[in-house]
Length: 82
Image (cartoon, rainbow, N blue to C red; front, side, top):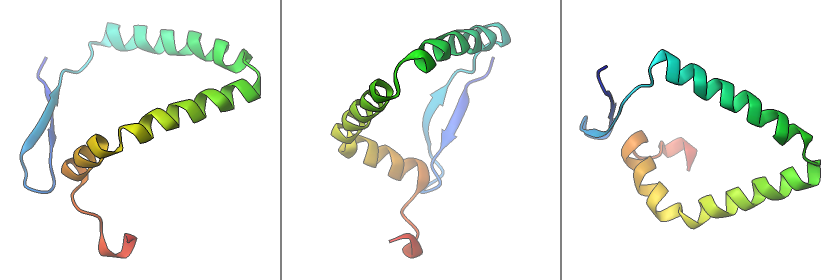
């Protein structure tokens, strides 16, 4: 299988490559996700909210690194979005 190239719209360079999953691996991942969703849905809403907030906090800790990657992946922000 050939890698999937992620191309920067900023300069056209390849900034990452990822190997696609085989059909069997994708089906297995889907089955795991479906099984995990049942456990997630069974958690009380307040617990799910707390877990999501904790995840957002972790992402916010990574903001400088994510910002650079987002800039490479998406290009600079459009002037109308500022």
